Image 1 (spheres, rainbow, N blue to C red):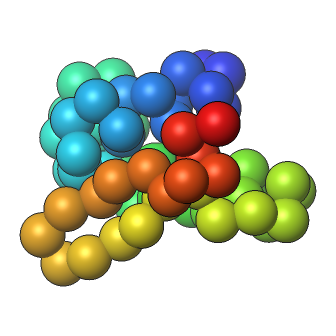
Image 2 (image 1 turned 180 degrees about the horizontal axis):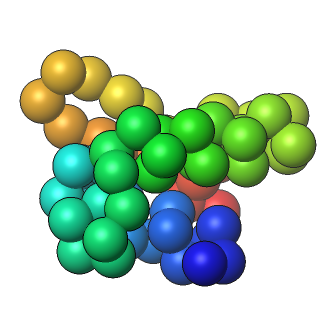
Amino acid sequence: MNDMILLAEVTETGSFTRAGGRIGMPKSRVSQRIAQVEARLGLRLLNRSTRQVSLTGTGQV
């Protein structure tokens, strides 16, 4: 799956768990893939808390 589509799913659902459930991928793998994208870009795209996930300003751009 394209990582940008995966990022869009996480953003749309507001959750790694819900995004993973939608696309049939474990939450841990979703989180890992997003972290890899952020590492490749050298940017933080998502704000993570224990209750929600949202885009950073950079992620919105």
